[in-house]
Length: 289
Image 1 (cartoon, rainbow, N blue to C red):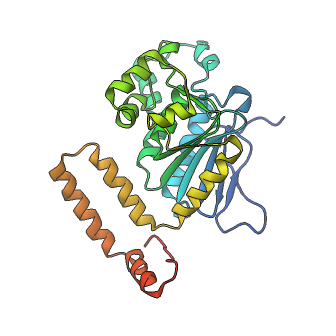
Image 2: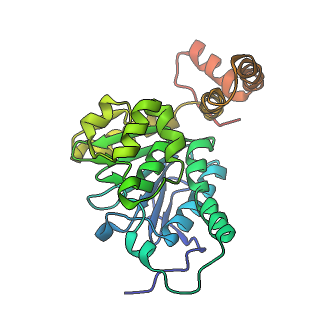
Image 3: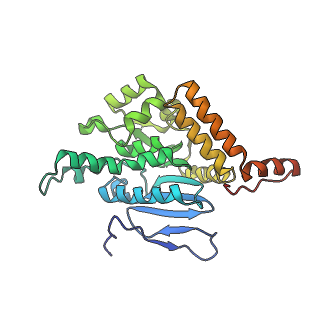
């Protein structure tokens, strides 16, 4: 078996002939990448370990998410897992490896914060991000799912915060995202006890938007992603930014930035196209301009 490429390299090659312009496929690695018709799919690719996270996976995910954030060909980002799992969280075998001289505490904090930018990108990039939770989702993997704008789960999927079982206090934004989605009291319960939730239980708590049969999950997610690709990119980016701003601003300041954002977008070609398409009774053709 050929050795993995170094974690800092992203090797992208054109997909098969006949694919739409801009479609790319990442060669075999810890994260697979495919861009098709505006939807970038990142597939965590350690199925033999339920896609447990390693430093290599973090670095590759970070580079690909930065790519998605800045590539105009990407309208929607879907995060999922290969095989029967979404992501089992951090790979405990790597965590247990204490070989080599210990790094100073500030260095370790800085390195972790660098990797946690993955969660920040999923939450803040001006593209809609979707977690397609196809199996067990735990720890840092659940953090990544919670960082996404939308979450859809297979019926057999399970979710657990898991950190308390590894004697850890949480990372990759879990303790920031979970209270905002589930409420503070329920988030504390999920974090302190680390109970495993079935997909339907997670849906009842609002942790996932919908649950689908296992073999229908990706089709349903791709259908929704395709619908979002047809929406105006500037409007979606503005809506996402408004919701994110609402998490940190009081009402008066939020109204200020919301008004500024709408006036700027109102002058876009896409807004004019939406009006023209309405009067001409045809589907709009948005360009993100």
